[in-house]
Image 1 (cartoon, helix red, strand yellow):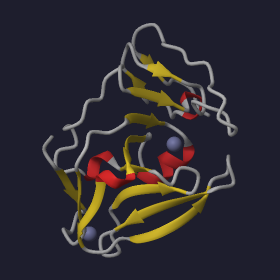
Image 2: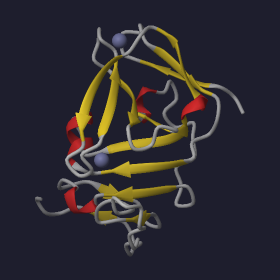
Image 3: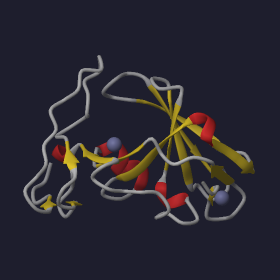
Image 4: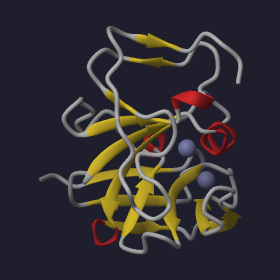
Length: 163
Ligand SMILES: [Zn+2]
Ligand SMILES: [Zn+2]
């Protein structure tokens, strides 16, 4: 498949991926809200070997997850502060891209077959899930890896209440 590239606002930091995402997670948790300044994050997950920096050098912020106590590494441009990707102490073989940093943020499939919405319990008012997508109230699995039970809302889902 074609190489898909992306970069930061100022252009100093450039990256590319050489494979399609393993899956896509759309997350409404408070971490993702703060990290994006928005209602949540669309995060295509890749095997780490599929990603490489082609220009510039990202800075890194280490965040300790309140849920797991493990470290999450947020990579960003030190000049313009655009966040480009996330890596994880818990999953060293995976990498998440801030989807909006791609030159074409719509290049990858984002369908009920390859995607899920998580942390609906923390979604801010106005957050939406299109009909047909698998959802979770919080994580899709517990800390020990036990899968949580998913649900598919009837029709489109709209967050109406405050957390
Ligand atoms: Zn930049
Ligand atoms: Zn999140």
